[in-house]
Length: 68
Image 1: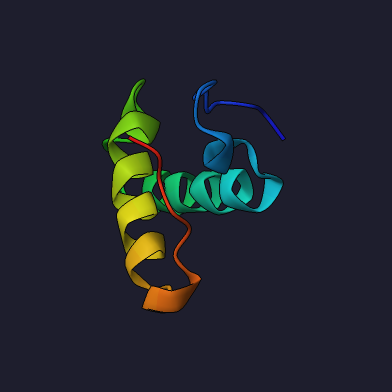
Image 2 (image 1 turned 30 degrees about the horizontal axis):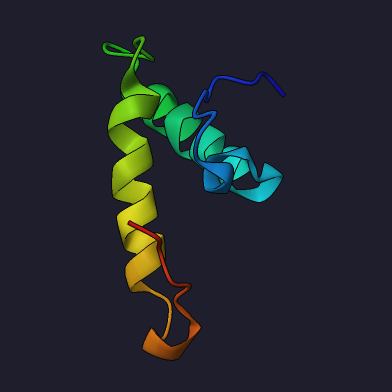
């Protein structure tokens, strides 16, 4: 698997399961839209959307506290 995600300050994006799922999403998008394919930076658009959906899918009592 290629490491295409570089978010050194965010441990969430270094998890193998998260990287695998993001890779799968990008691959499927590229395969379903061959006229567009994969373009540099698409992972930067996908990552915050994926995080928001994953974060919102957690029950409120399971959400970790975030230090400001």
